Image (tube, rainbow, N blue to C red; front, side, top):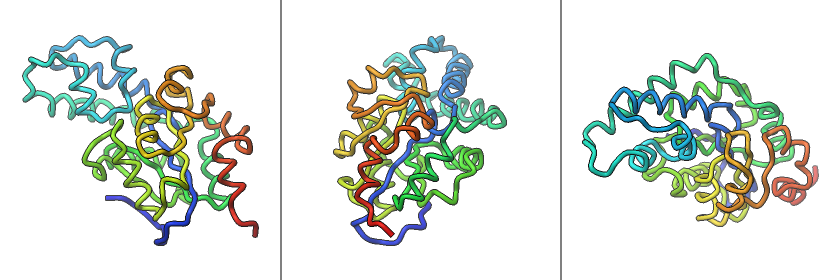
Length: 237
């Protein structure tokens, strides 16, 4: 269920943030967890191939990496194994440098802030505790809020709905090709960050209008970014 403290109305401006690999340094942990889950069921999938698809929903990732003629009855078990292996790394999760400050600066400027994540609800709760930024977050989505995972735009649509906001008034920040494609499907300007391990050229090819090294780099350039342009439109106190 979408968590929201937002009042209704369509005139708000705001920023949607992916979480894994964008605000939390977890992309390679997910890669390792998927690698281990595949091996538990006899599939030797290279980590490099897995990493390129992190950010997709689990069912899409499994379907793209395993042979079409496999025993699909195992897919749910593989996804459950990934979840368990990832959970074993919860104590190691860390916020990326500048993540909390970036959320705080957007909030202080009057923009609505939503976490547009397709993580499991429990994983999202853990990552929010790591961020320690709930005071700056107006809404958050989890895997329960979308029929289709990224690159489908369902998660972003759910986040927009939770904020009572139109796509034309939003900017999205993410680290994966699938984030860029999901935002492009709704006509939302997408800012890419390379801290999840995906190269700038790949993010731009997928639709990123700007690319930064991570939250700190974006924060340092906030005024000239797509977020800065939204901030400039906010009414002055």
